[in-house]
Length: 255
Image 1 (cartoon, rainbow, N blue to C red):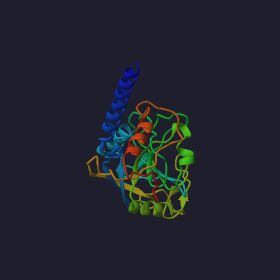
Image 2 (image 1 turned 60 degrees about the vertical axis):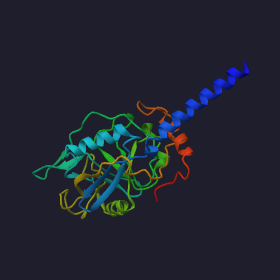
Image 3 (image 1 turned 45 degrees about the vertical axis):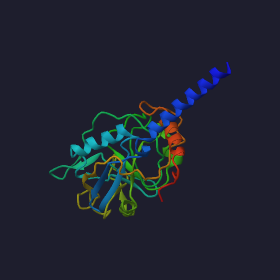
Image 4 (image 1 turned 90 degrees about the horizontal axis):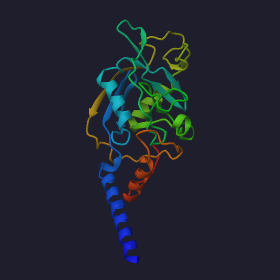
């Protein structure tokens, strides 16, 4: 009986170690395509997490491939909170129209909404309702956004230089134009919602397609969301185990 128990223990342990090593082989499970958000206020470089949030990154890249984010406007900016875009754009006649939305993407709330992360916006009360709109966290919003509405999916991280550009956008005055344009950053609040008076994203370009371009990033996991949405069940726990096994890996916030 003792031999059987030992054999079972060895077999189970071997399987667990093999599984963890296989997971660890995914380039530290923190991988990224690098994109550059080219705005009228400067360029913002972002590392996308291809492996750990594949559905969200795939959705985001599909809009980039279609040039859907060209000439989009930063329509919402709240100091000390977030800056949001991806929903509205200028057409050829400089009239603001809605970005054509694709099917919704499943929620992947693996990482924490700390400063410098990019996440998907979605409808209230529906965790799996993200389409084209995204936002960048200007501060540590983990206490609210990691658990609200199933948790908001963080799918990339902005570089320090990119956050300087984001802070300059957040420093602009805002104006209410009605509808979704409640806090639109503008150069002059006395003027209307024109291309010259708003923050425009000229384009989003892919600058590095290597999925291991962010292997050395130190990310903070979302530990507040206990739900397991489709496609992400159990992933945070497995990530934690893998990261524990990797020497030198620390959980730190983007500062």
